[in-house]
Amino acid sequence: MITTSALRARQQAAVASGVGTRAIYASRAENAELWDVEGNRYIDFAAGIAVNNTGHRHPKVMQAVQEQAQRFTHTCFHVAPYEGYVRLAERLNAVVPTGGENRTMLVTTGAEAVENAIKIARAYTRRSGVIAFAGAFHGRTMLGMALTGKVVPYKKNFGPFPAEIYHAPFPNAFMDISVDDAIGALERLFAADVESERIAAFIVEPIQGEGGFNVAPKEFLVRLRDIADQHGIVLIADEVQAGMARTGKMFGFEHAGIKPDIITMAKGLAGGFPLSAVTGKAEIMNAAHTGGLGGTYAGNPLAVAAANAVLDIIEDEGLCARATMVGERMTSRLRALAARQGMHRIGDVRGLGAMVAFELVDDRQTKMAAPELTSRIVAEGEKRGLILLSCGTRANVIRLLAPLTIGEDTLEEGLDILEASIEAAFAASTEEE
Picture 1 (cartoon, helix red, strand yellow):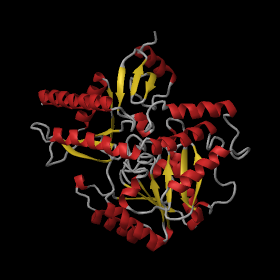
Picture 2 (picture 1 turned 135 degrees about the horizontal axis):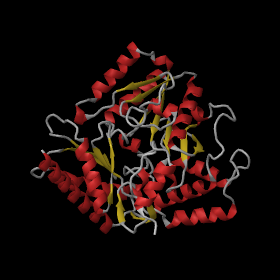
Picture 3 (picture 1 turned 180 degrees about the vertical axis):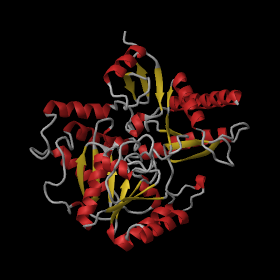
Picture 4 (picture 1 turned 120 degrees about the vertical axis):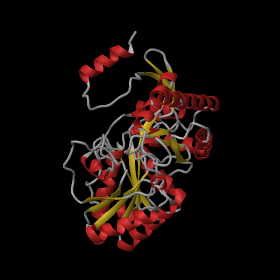
């Protein structure tokens, strides 16, 4: 029998230490459950970091991939294009709300989607500057890291980064950063650091992922759209984590009622297979010269088949509505827990749809981060059979990303384990004080 300890030793001897992992070595998974190599069962509140919105091994995804594998697995779209890619592009063009005619390109990772969106915006505007936001995460490539507004672990020791990337504050009501504060800082950036005429694009997450599930206020996104229009700046919505029904709508930006120029997608797009997409207004997307976009594995046929199945599942199973229901159950449980005596270290509960998080602090007045308590809750959950993820620039936020297809009983069981894990971690922390 393969054991966790034996695999851990093999990993340490074979895998670069910079690749951080947990000690849960997967053996099999089904919908919202995962079993490790020693037979331990876990309820998955991570979904592969928002990848398995349709659950592990959804039957329709598996069937689509198996059928495609019988035909061909790779040709390179540039060499011998195929109908599945074209069909997926047509469907994404129809569903992405830019307010105009769209075009799509497919690549493999979220970082690739982001980099291509920047390339396209620069080609269209003939400008080079880009503005991202504090707390953002846009990938681990050099440009992705430059855009990312979180140093540890993503940027530390890896510079220098590409030039002409600027950061502005992101609104955060919990940390007393208002929309006016954020917009005012953006205007000061134009006055002090770079003229607006040099900026090709804003890139912004409607809900920051690694930054701590900070929800962009509607007013902020509306004003950002207005500033982009005023200065001829392309507005890129990074929907890599928030997209594909996760927030209760197909895309997180839809909650604000605005229309971005370009949207990047990945994670939940292909049900566990590596695929990403850039979809945007045709005039902008067509600005790049022929041959300037693409990649050898871009739009892999198996992943494309999976993505077409995912779009069917989202519609057929009503996953946007399901995300809203799952999120309401999560937030109601967490807010009831936070209101109990002795639970004052739960500083904030927030999110949209089934993209839910809670922030841990030493007390609600000072809002001093409690990263040790955060890690303890994650560890307690793992001991009890629940996979949790932390995030946040202060490493003090726990995010909940259960598959949208999670069963009722499994959801309740997971929330029970979460509550017990929080209680145990709080008790152990109090004893040490």
